[in-house]
Amino acid sequence: MLQVFDIIGPIMIGPSSSHTAGAVRIGKYARSILGTEPKEAIIYFSGSFSKTYKGHGTDKAVIAGILGMETDDERIPISMEIATEMGVTFSFVEKEIDGAHPNTAEIVLKDAKGNQAVVQGASVGGGNIVINQINGTEVSISGKSDTLIIPHKDEPGMIAAVSNILAWNGVNIHGFSLCRDQKGGTAVMTIEIDGGIEEKVNQVILAHPHILGCTILKAI
Amino acid sequence: MKYDSIAELVLMAEKQKTSIGALVLKDQAKIAETEESVLFATMARSLEVMKDSVEKGLDKDKRSASGLTGGDAYKMKVSVDAGKNICGKIFGQAMVKALAVSQTNACMGRIVAAPTAGSCGILPSALLTIAEDRGLSDDELTMALFTASAIGMVVANQASIAGAEGGCQAECGAASAMAAAALVEVCGGTPKQSEHACAIALKNILGLVCDPVAGLVEIPCIKRNAAGVANAFVAAELALAGIESAIPADEVIWAMKKIGDAMSSSLKETAEGGLAITPTGKKLCEQVFGCSK
Image (cartoon, rainbow over all chains, first blue to last red; front, side, top):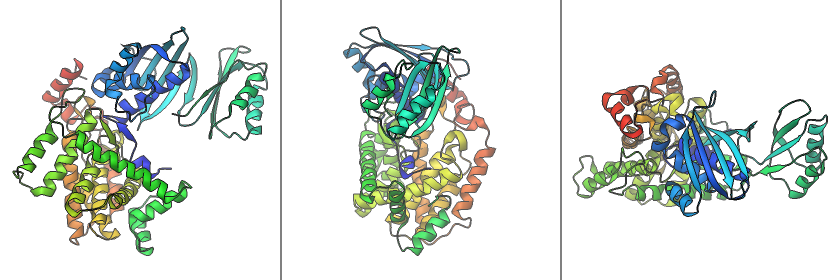
C-alpha cells in the first residue's frame, strides 16, 4: 500500500532512482555480505547497466554503496576518488548475464585477508532492488527487512528447527526460500523477518549440529 | 482511506471542513501508527532538501555526468533578475527553480523524488515560488506537500507515475497535477478547486511521451520540468478563477491510464523512439556512450 513518502520521496542523489539509488543499494548489500572492509571490487554490469552506466553515474553509485554510503550521500559523485584514497581498488567489466534483469550488477568483493563475497543484484525500479545470487546460491532478497542467510546440511526437519527457534523468540517470518546444490549436500535458507533479531537467537540457531552458519543481513 | 479517487478525497475534506493536506496527514499518521508531528517533521525535511536542490542547481558551470546539460537555470535566472523575461516574475522564478532542481538531479546532486527523479523540479518550484511571492511559511508549504502527495497516490494507484509504464504524462503530468492542487490550497482555494486544478493540469499534458536522449534523465526532461511547473500555474490560476474542468479529475486519470497503455513501448523510457531517435538524439547518444542504441 502506497504512503505519502512513496510519492514525495525518496530523498536521493540523482539522476535516476533505478540507475543511481538502486545501484548504491546493491553495492551496500554486497558490502554487508562481505561483512568486513572491502579492499578490492570487481563490478560486472549487465543489460542497461552495461550500456548506460557512465551517463547515469551507476559506477559511482555502486562504489559509494560498497564504501557504505546511503542513497542520499552527497559524496556519491566523488566515491571513486574516496575509494582510491582509502586504498580500495576497483574495476568495471561489461558482461551480459543470460536471463538477468536489464539492470543487473554482479559484484565481487575481497577484503584484506582474501575473504570474498560474490553478489548479484538487480535494480527493479524506484530504487528498489532484488539480490538474486550470493556466492553462487540463488536467493531473492529485497533488502527492505532484516534477512537471515543460513547454510545447512540437507537433512529432514531443518526448516522446522529454524522456524521453531524464531517462533519461540517472537520473530515473525514474512519471506522464505530454500535451495540446495544436491540431495544430502548443502542447502541455504533465506529468511526475511519483521523487525530485528537478537544476537542470542543467532547463537541458538548456530548451536544446531547441521547448521553451517547464520549471517544476519540488516535492512538497507 | 484508499486513495483511489480524487472526488472522494475532496468530499471527505469538505465534510470534515478541513484541507486535503490536513486530512491526509491525519490518515497517514493513523496508518503508520505514529504521531502527526512525526510525519510532519519528515515532510519538513523533504522541503529543506527541495530548497537546497534549488540553490545547488543555479551553478553556472556545473555539467551533468554525461556532459550533455548544465547551466540553464543560471541563464534563466540572469534573464529574470534583469527583468528581461517576458512572462513576469512568478513564471520566471518558477522556471528558474524547476530547471535548477532538475539540473541538480542530472548532476548527481541530492533531490526529493516528487513523484520521480525525472519530474523532481515541478512541485518544489511551484511551492517555493508562490511562497516567495505570498510570504508563506514553511509549515504551510509542508502541509501542501501532503496535499500534493495525496493527488500523487491516486494517480499512482489508478494509473501510473512511471515513465516506463505511462510515458512522461505519468511523471511530469502527475507532478504537474500534484503541484496545481497544492498551489490552489496554499492560495486559499477550496478542495473542489484543487480537484479542478488537478484535472486541468493533467488534461494539458495527456499523451506526452517519455523519449529521453541516450536514456538519460536530461534531454528533454530538464526543460519539461520548466514546462510542467508553468502548466501547474496555468491550471491553478484557472481553477482559482472559478473555471471548472468539464471532465472530472478521476476520469482524466482514467484517460491517462488508457493513453499510457495504448502508447508504444518505444515511447516509454526505452530511448527507442521520439526525440531519442532523431539524428541529433542519436548523435548525442553516440557522443556519450561511443555507440548509438
